[in-house]
Image 1 (cartoon, rainbow, N blue to C red):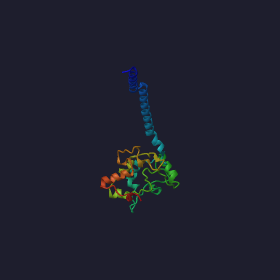
Image 2: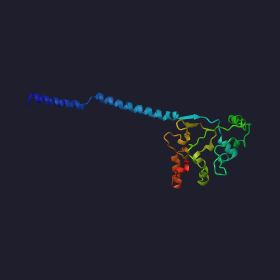
Image 3: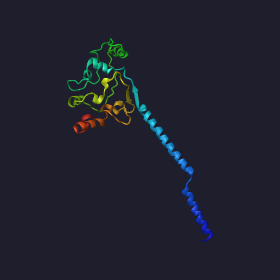
Image 4: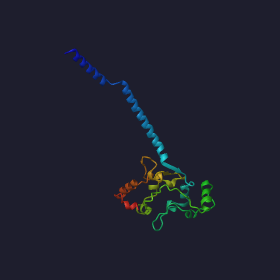
Length: 223
């Protein structure tokens, strides 16, 4: 073999060794890049988890606190204020006329909330502009009569232990859709532990499927 051939062969082998060995600096840079990416991803993920709900939902207080415990002790159960009419329609939030069956423009207690109600609403014959936590979209029809009378459900199944509350929680509204946060649920991922944690269509369909064997038809709820 000639000297030129030996030189070419040795050169090729040296080049191959250089190509396969790699530069340790490149490996270090790649590792730092991966670490940086993971840290940035984690920071963005946690920031979104904490900040997104605050950006998505506005928060407003009710006109004054409402003590459900006091009213159930004094007036009776839920149906005393939230009742079904003779034609089967639901009364919903009690109006001022219903409240004035017990209340007058003279406060019945010494709390600030009672004073506000008596002076700002009863005395002025002004309806209380409550924010309704469970308000559904306009396209949704929900029959309380069908669920209470026919299905035998109690209020807690959908509304939770609200009858045990002594104050009114803030009303949170989706800035995009205008819906109450109680419809989607407090958990941003839509995970729920109780039947009342969420009021989405999927939850209604799942309950219908479990109780009746069929999730129902669109026209039953959407008019």
